[in-house]
Image (cartoon, rainbow, N blue to C red; front, side, top):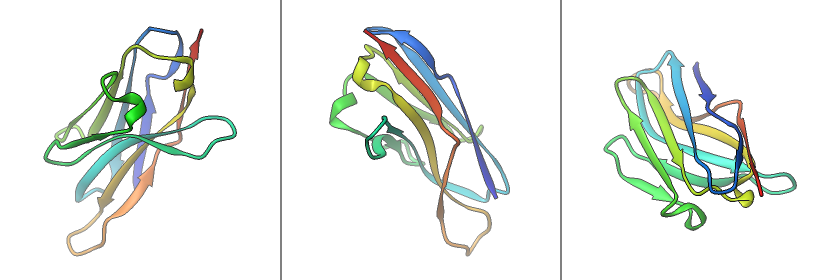
Length: 121
């Protein structure tokens, strides 16, 4: 099994910054893509940003230019630096990774428990 542990959430004023971290642990043979998703109250979970093992990134239009995703493959950790935060960014942020625990086994998605980000106006 793969465990994902997120950290870095909290309360911040509009215009402020936060950095989220997510470390993967457990029986991991290989990690493919990693990413961040978020879910606001009453809304569906949505993509924030993803990053491939090679470092290619993809962002939701709503966060482009404000958020930066990165990863450290040696530490099995993904980060998202969130700048110029807005009240609309308030949500529970979930870490995701696509991994397999042995050669020849299929990749599957794993999720963290979520960390709350609240942006006050």
